[in-house]
Amino acid sequence: TYILFDAVAALIAWYGGITAGLLAVALSVLSISIFLLNPHQVFTVSSGDGWHLVLFIVVALVIVFLTAELQSARQRIEQLSDRKARHQEAQLQMALQAAQMGIWYWDLSSGRITWSLEHEAIFGLAPNTFDGRYATFEAYVYEPDRDTLTQVIQQAIRHRIEYHHEYRIVWS
Image (tube, rainbow, N blue to C red):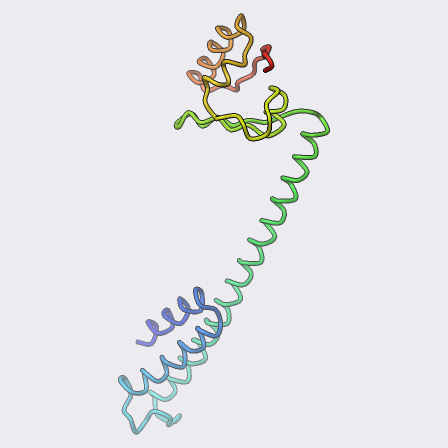
């Protein structure tokens, strides 16, 4: 019957940390002893209910400590992952700058295109001036190359294949 109290203590330890988990165990012991045990047998270890209470305390404390440790480990992993992602982003930026290359992303559902600063520079734009619209991009493509570009893009979308095409651009 004490399993619900164990679950609550684990949940509180997960979201609130070890201090909140220990407080939950203490309040659970108090609640159990007031509402579920005979008041004369609460701290009598020789009775069956007393042993159940002691067992509950041990199990609840183990659960709280393990849950808090698991949550702490998860947070450390997230921090390491974030640090690694920032490091990889910095390496990518250095590589793009050194190679004088840019990257772009086109969200087909919204139609929004995102260019890296290097990609804007390739097109002769000042940093953060590309408005993310296909029509703006297309205006920079050399006019005789536009029809072929549109066909290649439509084919890549229709057949779900990798897009690869070279075209000329007109600088500002």
